[in-house]
Image (cartoon, rainbow, N blue to C red; front, side, top):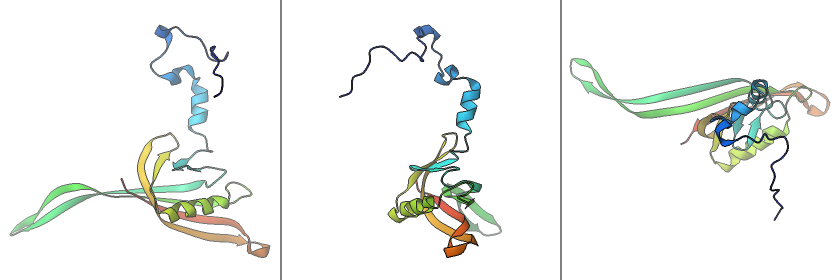
Length: 165
């Protein structure tokens, strides 16, 4: 078992309890919070997979949410409608990987491996907000600018996610 020091590290201020703010981020300078929260290295997270400049940066995300309503026909009037609950919640992510600039082709294999499990994964945006549990329903991959040896200069992708929770 590692030794745990009794004294706190020197870079952590020793504040009396009454000076500790309710929001721990108040101790972090505002420009550091902004720089960390809006980093292009972390755009979206699906399970343990991070969409970012070094893996798969996307340029378009579309979310489609529906609600269900049951209808009963009525004579001489419009159908009666009743809300019966939430419907489909789907996200489509489009992007382009160009390894010379941003992204990695191995990220595609990672996502395909995740889809092959059939599991659902928590989806979080770049600010840490949980969007729900989603499964990968569809993955489309298009090669662009084919070079010698059949290697693409870029690969456009489309990922369709469906909420399952």
